[in-house]
Image (cartoon, rainbow, N blue to C red; front, side, top):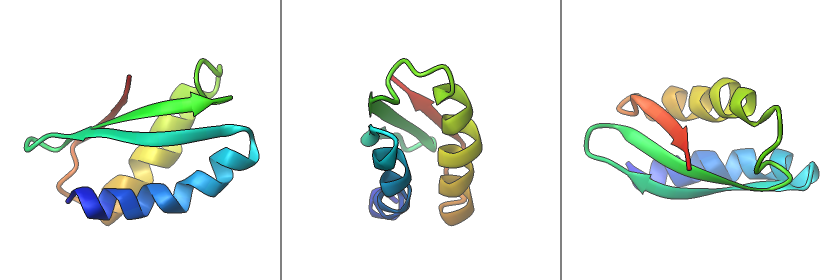
Length: 73
């Protein structure tokens, strides 16, 4: 499951990097909880919660249905 999530993040990264940000996979639990770290311009950005939910979580869940939740640390 971790490898599938990494592939999805690799698809998302160019868009985030174009705006000066990035994303890192921190953990994947057996219960389907994915923890990521937003970096650069994404860390602390007012739109980061929306990006996390509407882009990152949606794309991961589409490709990896076992994922139940995506959270940022």
